[in-house]
Length: 336
Ligand SMILES: Nc1nc2c(ncn2[C@@H]2O[C@H](COP(=O)(O)OP(=O)(O)OP(=O)(O)O)[C@@H](O)[C@H]2O)c(=O)[nH]1
Ligand SMILES: [Mg+2]
Ligand SMILES: [Zn+2]
Image (cartoon, rainbow, N blue to C red):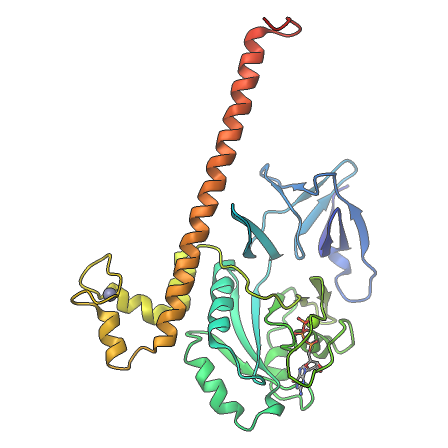
């Protein structure tokens, strides 16, 4: 008999899972121990580190992962790039940012790029509306950089904006909350779950949050939706993806298309549409810088990722050649 489970938490060497028909907040997850390498095979022969949101097929003899429909991935630091899947099979990425202290537009743009890259739909959630005098004005500023994305302004103590978020919790949908520590992700998860599932942090006098949540966890909601809470991560690396960047920065990308030279560096070349827009005040320097920084980072990540692929290919050939030579020598024959 084959059974389908969902990974609600992934630790080193083991995952916590719930059966597909037990994702209602009423069941206790159980633990599945992984092989020594911590990997699980997929139906198409890949071996992956399981992550929260993965679907796991288990029969009497083995477990395998369903191919991921979407995945929120980040670049983990290191000389050769390794991509880490933060969450899989998600429909909506909630990009959570606080209004107090002031929202960081660059961070929102970075999170939106990650979100677009995942294949899921990004939604911006601005928290702590109760702490600022002009939440609407701040929302408008954020909406201006979150092109084609819904922006919701919420407050958990007053309940403002929560119904608009509840409308996203359709049965079977999976949402993941990302954003800085102290933004109020866990507070939001608890409010939407209607019970205290995740621990939340005390607000410090300087307004900065500590890292309260330390693991990623999928919380099944009573209505049939699933909400993944994540720890606030500093400086998540973007994974190279021109489409995601072009979507997040559709305005800048359109201007770049209009530059006279296809390889324009926007550094003073004649006919540069970006320079012209900056001079006319139609494009903010901050947004241009933010786009350039993420584009550079994505290109750097792509080079490191290529280097890793080449190294892996080299290792594979070394192994193949060794096996081939061993084959020539024949089994059991002594070395010359
Ligand atoms: N006034 C006000 N405070 C809020 C709101 N949402 C969250 N907070 C407070 O902000 C602090 C941080 O909230 P958390 O939910 O722990 O933040 P988090 O994003 O989960 O943080 P990490 O787990 O560290 O990533 C807590 O003291 C919350 O009570 C809000 O809408 N209004
Ligand atoms: Mg938290
Ligand atoms: Zn240009």
